[in-house]
Image 1 (cartoon, rainbow, N blue to C red):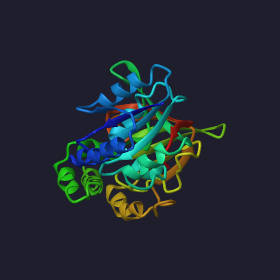
Image 2 (image 1 turned 90 degrees about the horizontal axis):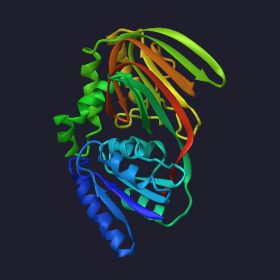
Image 3 (image 1 turned 180 degrees about the horizontal axis):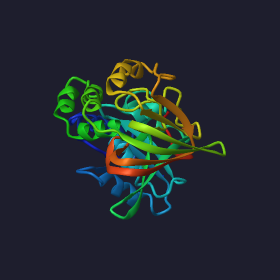
Length: 313
């Protein structure tokens, strides 16, 4: 089995580069053969992984970076049957690692992975949409969504505040700070939502959609538990839709959201689903694992159960 490392040295304001040196020393000490690719820009991780997983060869894929790098690598996998995936989290949020129960630092995870043949199967999400007349698909491990949370992710991608907070290990706080500002400025949209779950179909018309998130893991945005009961191996996704409440009311509910105590609160709906179609009256910002997809109004979210093999738990 080939050991392939995808490394984003720029993650967490460059601290991942220091971590890679330690990983490299470990690999040399253990006399482990490997291939490494360093990302230099958007799309690199996807391209590297696509090339490596297209031959039918078994690949042990180790991805060092934040949730964005992990997402890019996920979207490059061509052969899920012959790919065993191990996140080596080095971002400011690391929501995917937390969501699958991955414990310890990168070196601990790597050591566990290289000393076992066992793996666990996890679900992943699939986002389908049309952009510039072309049908598109984006896979996600943590979450995907439309509205305020997506716009916050877009701003965080190039946030001076995030870079500053990363110096103190507090980069995940960026998401909460940006959310407050966007909540009072972003336009909302009415929407038609169709839920497919357990062989039943339900359609709802909702007013003033603040955001609609499809959660595979329980938390996004640096640990905010949007769907406290969600599990990445449940076989379904969980929709968290905030709608039909005032901006101020939503603001007053944010402390409950941060603590995971928002279940049952007016205007906050949590719904399990296998597939969900959303048609917005107005285009809104869309993300997948924090990566910007565009401003769209017609989306489909689906669960792909037991799809991803993960080692190192």
